[in-house]
Length: 303
Image (cartoon, rainbow, N blue to C red):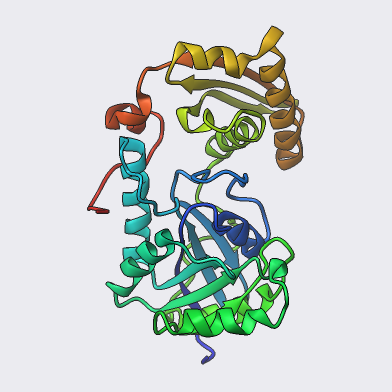
């Protein structure tokens, strides 16, 4: 790589729940995208920015490309991921070392249809047993597509991330920085507060419910004494409201406490958090409702 400053967009793509958000957070060095063990946690296109003396890498965390696109929300998530892929200077195709699915095939098909340079990122290598099997996984994915690089990593353990960060700028265009050097995300505090609350809901609630809820910040006020946040948790059915609130309000209190503690740590200020639960029927299948709730405007196709 020459001495020119390099900057570009790096799309982090893959099937749901393969570790894309964990990887981007680790590469940026700060939590900019929420993480849970449940698929489809990431619903929005989120930028994570890593700046150095000779480069600025703008990572784009995307919703997982998936086959089940029955609701408007799923279709918008697929379009968001496809747009990020089309606009990227480099693609990191994240897969799970030793596990290949039909959804991996779907994502690779999209990558193969574009001319954008791509890396294969074999994530979760810390779980590969025996370790010699990793060579077989590298050989296998190398035969599926002409990747510029195949990089085995563990996003959770931090294994080999330094090597990946050295490789990426070599494939970016010569360009001045696009963001101020201290910027780590394009998303503001209100969006990140809503995501923290949704993360705590997803972690605490039964498996089927998190996909039927979203969080909207109604008020976010900051002064020298702290931050006051008023948020609405939207659910699709009246029966879901009781689940979110919990017996005697216990679930909502648990979620609120966990979210408040994380927000206090992030903002380095005392946080007053108030949560309400409201019903908006079929919000996840209404593009108008989705736009009003902060989802990305639809553009292009993701068939």
